[in-house]
Length: 187
Image (tube, rainbow, N blue to C red; front, side, top):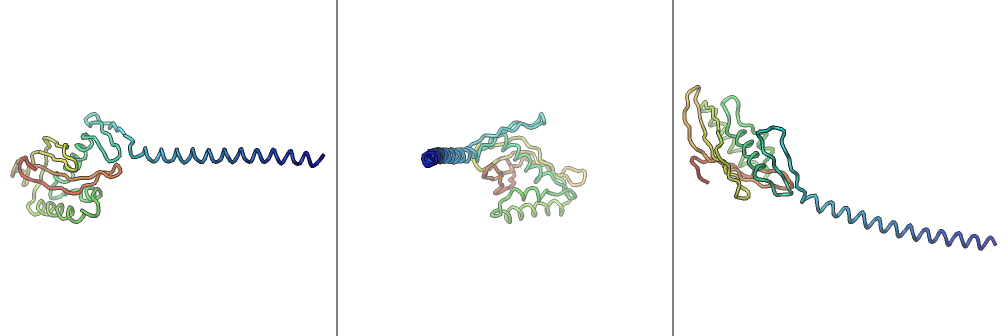
């Protein structure tokens, strides 16, 4: 009699063990499937950001694709940091170089230091007033504006310049790959 009860309990435990094994395998497959789905969707997620200030535009970022309003705001920030300078308040090198990959670091640093030295050597104050943005070309932002230069209180020049920003977007991160300032409204 005890043998029958023992066999009955062993059979019940064997069935429970098989049921738990099947459940464990099923749940493991579901977890793996959900993890794969989550990882594959992270790159395609579109994040819309609405700034609290009323004068800023909303923008979105989706993987390596960004809205033109995002590019305009980045161009505005970079142009302000690079082109609005005085002999005492220089270019914000640390801020700009934090957005430059190591591959382009020396080239951009040299360009910015040359501009900084030009401003200091000539005792200039310069202000860039943006008129237009062109974000249609992938990897390049063209900012057209008026660059006014002052020596002390006197205006030395007021000319149209084009500020070109070469960039790349990698994993929703904006990287500057080149900058240059050209006189006139051209590439």
